[in-house]
Amino acid sequence: MATDATDRSDAATRPFADAVVEAEQIIRTAPFVRTDQDLAEGLDYLAGSIKASLHMVGAYQHDHPYFASSTGPYTKLGLDNPDTLYFHAYLRDDAEYVVTGRRGTTADLSFQIMNGDYSPTQSPDSLTAFDDRRLRIEADGSFRLRFGPPKDGEGDDYVALAPGSAMLIVREVFSDWENDRRGEIRIHRADTLGTSPEPVPSSQMARRYAVAGRMLVSRIKTFLAFPEWHYLKLPVNTLTEPRSTPGGLSTQFSSVGHYDLSDDEVMVITVPATDPAVAPYMGFQLGSLWYISLDYINHQTSLTRDQARVDPDGRIRYVVSERDPGLANWIERTGHSRGFLQFRWQRLTRDLAPADGPTAEIVKFDELPRVLPHYADQRVTPEEWKERIAARQVAVARRMLG
Image (cartoon, rainbow, N blue to C red; front, side):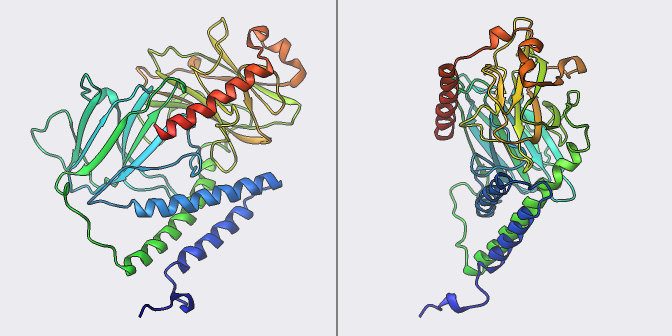
């Protein structure tokens, strides 16, 4: 007869349930929670983190690995890029893995090997990072890569795993949301393909719940601490010069900052529309103080170069505002008077210089016609704006199911 677990004090899920309570307390006591919107978004972030922690523990497979979605609209973390599909698989540094796929038409496809996961005190080291220019892509778009211990005489499709290699991260980046099409990607361990993993006993499932609980709390703590390392020590309402992105993603530069605006204030950000031959991908977004993207499906809280309207002088002028200015490059704050600013350039063919980066100016809302040199060119009607939002909704739905 099966044991009635409902009366047991050692229920397998108890450590995870306790972790959820602890994580909620961290959310509720976060120093920037001031309004009900702040708290509601924090609790929604918690829900996504609960889902992601259970998902990632289930995907922890070294011997029969598969790519799992690292973050998405409902499992956000780490100022997720609205233009990117993130995948990860776990590795052992003493085993060989085969990655196969078909290149889509997206702006960038990159690979990164990490030696662990993020913690509240430090980021993992990036051991290897490269983009699809390293791949040998066949006429039909197919490609093949192998990852494994260092060997002599291996071909260009072999990537040596440094000691401590633990995770492979893949990023597929969309610039033209309406026309870019995602590719395909798979992974298997070379010596286990065609075999099956052993069944998981109940004791191991209990350990999984405990690990998921620790992962949940660490995840919440880490990405509340992360902005202190890279953003909040910067002067408010400014952006840094373009710089190689911390964390070793060698083909990406970024410019970051944080803002604090009243409802009658607007941040006008001006940046050159970088030549696609230099950076096939260029994107800008806002993030909340939970260090996650704002709603990029139903609101224009981000823009790629392809989505933005470029002024005749070759520059993009973003208007970060709570109020609707009736302009194509309006970046909606959606009630967030404080938040993060993030530019990314990817698949670069050269390092970026200060002149490639953004400048920011704070003006009153009513001053926009005066300070924007091509104000008339940027005007959109309410119907045109509705079409822009509809295009975002359709593009994300297609991307997630593609």
